[in-house]
Length: 427
Image 1: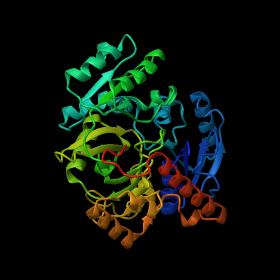
Image 2 (image 1 turned 30 degrees about the vertical axis):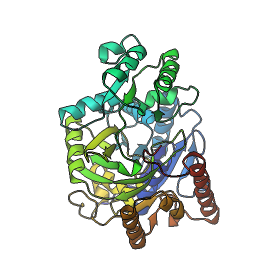
Image 3 (image 1 turned 45 degrees about the vertical axis):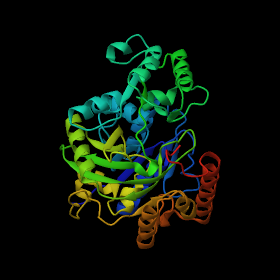
């Protein structure tokens, strides 16, 4: 049977969306487009995807109307809708019934989003299925939150002493979508809090703004960023986990707005963590892509899970680079007529490690002081090169190559400014 042409539309245009659109184009040759309010950093000078300018992206009704109009313009296409922004994932889930039914969405529904996107709900579900999470104090800023288990800012300070938590502590939002909407001086993606005064300052800012969800104060699990792990999963509409892939973080981003996002990953199989992720997704009755962050303690060796993002994650190209195309994983579930080759078995990842990095190689190597790890990374690089999502042969005009090279140079400058040398804590 002849299949219909496929059009994939990515909303937002971050590097994670680019990587997914690249995977769809590379594997299937599908038409790919990106819709955003402004032309994003990662899509500039690109010929991969047509840019659809939508100045009202932040208005759900306008976004739904634009997507339905786009569907009407392509009556003979299969349609895939994709994003890597928590806020947009939630908007799509909230308004799914209003969208043209032809839009196929490899993302979770609203109920699953609410079950996993709050880090407090995440921790509760992890506890149910036997997954270790950090010791956490949830802080609330509205009258209803104490009834849901959060403590007031004043009580949070006292709890730090009661639990004998030692500084530094990690401070981060329970809801990424709410964090997107709040602004205050020196706001960071993740706060590294070294004293009670620093804790109080952040909590006072949020309290003054009637922040609608919890802010979490967490123990710092020992170990630098090479003890962090990334895990990408997909659970199909039939309830089967069809992708489990992961790797060791080698270096994270260090600018205030991107702190903690993996910039380099060495792929690998972690059966214990994969089993934990499968238990979690099954218990949450979750479907679509998900991305877990966890850390291996440098003291005890135990695996501590921090969160699951209800989306594929910015660094998803490490999965495709390892030989498991993420668009094909989606297609096996939502567009099975387009896939003739047999599915990968088991974890889907080959045992041989692949090096993913958006950081130029000489810069990355200087952040790997451990000789054993550096040798493993050297070996992966020699075997497979350095896999960079923006360096795509089918999107390699002279202007694009020059622009990506400039991005690499700018990233080096940012590391020299914000994280000039590796530290034991990664901060």
